[in-house]
Length: 331
Ligand code: AHM
Ligand code: MG
Image 1: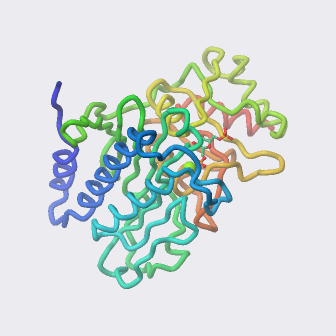
Image 2: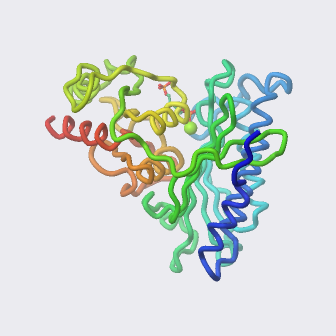
């Protein structure tokens, strides 16, 4: 096995570039990696542990929770609380933040996270993921709802964990590029395998749930057709859609292209969540040279009105994203 820089070493190196840093973000990132390792093990052993199938309750979105959704949520929550540097945690699986007002002045971070995205894919052994975005409190913040509802451009770090044929942690901080760390299961450590990831300027595929076509307006249909029929810069694109956001996004990051989950006539807000799905991935996409918008504005400039707000999402290679904006603007 080729041994590269460990995640621990990378995090400590980043910290050393900030003289006076107290290691709080480092601690948080390492606790997120700890949760990722624990969830990776649960995912890998799910059929053996009886963790396949529905939990029997609905989450705040009114969606049926899978057993692993609940397990992963608890693991991430406990690991991040144990880091002792967070005072608010907002999860897709919980209506209210796990909130520690008494810790607000001492613990300086809020994390938005989706503990296990794409859980409908669990039962068929398709890649799923965890997503997180980290914010540092501003001096005037007091832990009120409006203090938590901030634009994604305020994130100081964002990342995702991909439970696929290998487990990969993709991460960027406010002063790093996008780095990918692969878990070496026997060692319990993530190693840097994908340094300074950049997204190709243009891709050869677009990714969308085509079965939603009847629910889109004409302009949205035109955007998708433009990629399919070659009415945008570059070649005609082919369609690739897994239906698991992290798997679709990761392919887009590596190979280029565009992932779209547009709004619909009856559901203009779309399906995906702004603060723990779209915003962290938008930070990563932009850092990798790509972009992300909601059809009208940059994802990272959006300020939600509620914690579980949804947003349309167009995310991917710079040229593909610009072309989608152009076609949308033409109406
Ligand atoms: P979830 O957060 O309930 O798991 O739903 C999000 C998932 C994403 O992983 C994926 O991109 C999308 O829903 C797929 O939706 P659809 O089945 O409508 O294509
Ligand atoms: Mg999700």
